[in-house]
Amino acid sequence: MTQAIVVMGVSGSGKSTVAEELAEKLGIAFIEGDKLHPKSNVDKMSEGIPLTDEDRWPWLDLIGAELRKGSEGNGVVVSCSALKKIYRDRLRTATGSPLAFVYLDGSLELLSRRMGERKGHFMPLSLLQTQLATLEVPTGEPGVVTVSIDTTPDEIAKNALSGLKTVTF
Image (cartoon, rainbow, N blue to C red; front, side, top):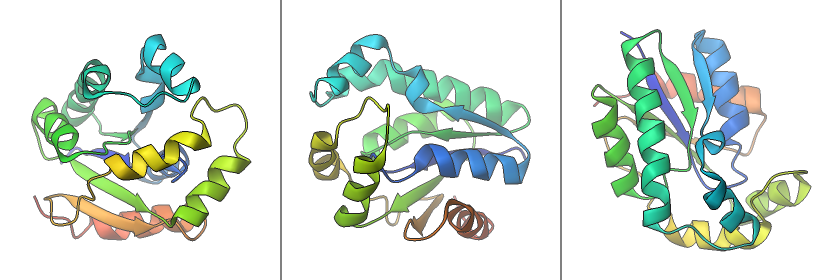
């Protein structure tokens, strides 16, 4: 079975790093979801302005199209915040086949420290609280694996792989 996986969580959780590591371990493609944002979204976030649902729909549709292509091909891992259930459901529908989510879970302290250490990223630390307030934790949703981020990226990816082997849809 081909695989379509979204590595999700708030900013600073390590989505891109873990998604890339996971894709490498699985031997499938990795897509950086942030690169699919239109310039207007990046500009807003760079200015510390939270995105609205209306800002996110076109971006989520692009991610959904990539997930569908990957699920019909050799598989794909995409990094995407997917903060609300309605966003995840939109991605599930767009994919058209089982879609797994790896939810990266971490404390405010750890997330803040990681964001403060990043260089050259458009997302300012000031938006972390907004993202945490928006986050609808995916506990109990089908196809979701929750992984703690309080370890190395390699260990997080290994924990995600172990969880993905037991996931049900």
